[in-house]
Length: 126
Image (tube, rainbow, N blue to C red; front, top):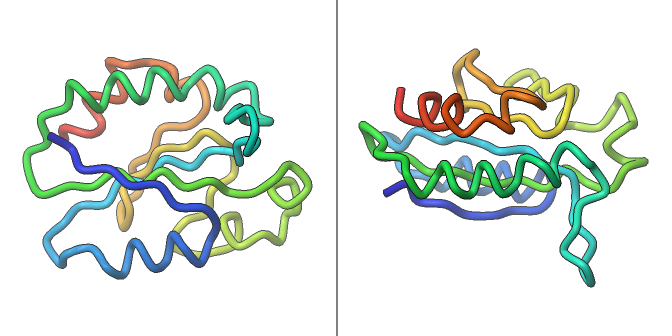
């Protein structure tokens, strides 16, 4: 079963990535912040992809030690700022949400691919 954790913000993501085991593959699912009262995201694509990703990870049988880190990237004004660290960090370069990436590799699924359970499952099992 794929381990999972949730973080909010760039610094929390860095901490999670740095604290994982050396042989642990990190998948990061970038989503827009959720409202504290409604738990609903400001991003319609994230609202659509969240249940698909949740169901897909239940069925995943990863080949190696892996963790899925769900990272909230901020409110809409912060996310849209082209200078935000998720966009500018050399090892992330996230340009849209939702995005699912394998940390340290070029592989990623973006927006509509994150709404396809078959693609998500295959991506996480590679």
